Length: 534
Image (tube, rainbow, N blue to C red):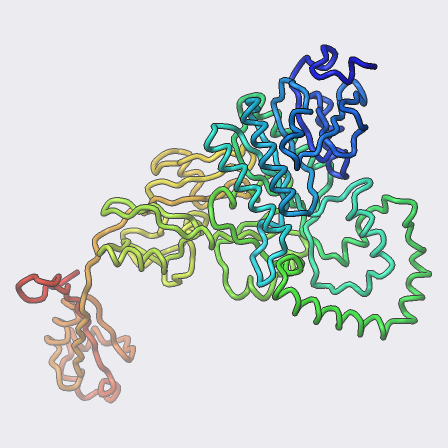
């Protein structure tokens, strides 16, 4: 037994190891069991057996260590550690940040190449007046890990799970208890739910990809599906015999007896929680209708095979105040590209911008550089990503759609989790335009601009009664456009061969021809008069 407690014992030194924290918790216990199938686990915990190291089985070794104490790191055995998988939390901001800082120092001292950190989807919530310390702490720990890994050339994998459901997990027990009072739950409270099996599979898959030189540093949101808290109490499987629900018929009778009180209480809770959610970041998460990432890494973190996400290029009042029923029925998680609205490059030959940039934003930025695009739609709030996905027509006869001006596009394939640039003229580019599917996301667009030329419109109105046919024909022919206020089918006959009858026809008295000519406005400082544009 003594050899099991000695640091660096030969029985435990072969093969790659994972240093794991939080293995005694709900999610950690499931993940530890999954990873132990391919790795040997050093499970660091304050609740491990006193005295040092305990070999629980041939794959898992427990180490008692307080990670908030930087002097206690020496208790961790000298092994060939490939990964630090950090799940432990004290729910104390100062202590949790100290744990992360100590683990990063350990990674630097022992040259541990990979770090996996379990954060939370709360990091993606929009901030409110009251930002809970736990939410701030998770975001700050993420930044510490990213900065450290980028600076030292190490790999990071940040996991943001939503509400995890599974055996012996807290939210599964909570849903079982809420079953008794489910009629009191406001119907507009939503959560994202994901199975523990999907969480462990996602981590194991990424670790395997890194081992095979295929994985890249990334953030992964593990959200599953979006469903109301009310419906979740019906659809989840009861996982504890201690909280077995009563029979439906008995519950129905009891609920009918207290139906008036139930309705009043639910409406009261609805009003109280809605008002409080305006100030609390955490409570507001129950009412979030969509996510709005502001950078590419954050945006891509939502899209993987474990999430039921739907991307939208628009963020209008419909999305703010109302979610279409089909999105709720299909348990979709709505992610908009409106936060991806940066214009990265503008030259006379190319404009590179994010897919969430709208036509109004693009034209405004181009005008400052005395540029524009040859064709654009009348609805200016459409995004450039949407112009790739659907045939958005413009006002030009030469270029039928906005997509004809695109030089290249940067896309992300959800299946392969890879980004790729597709250039105009290639087979892949032609197959993608107007044929994007749920597995492809448009990230950036490179579009061809043109010089901005301003024209002045002049109109010449001619009365059919006082104007001769020759004058009418001349202006109708040489004007860039003409308009007749009253339609007369035999007008061409009158103008061509019966000019004498024209002025005697009563219908002609109300007829007016407007010939429009566009004249190009000279640039400031230029000489000469106006130039006629075609």
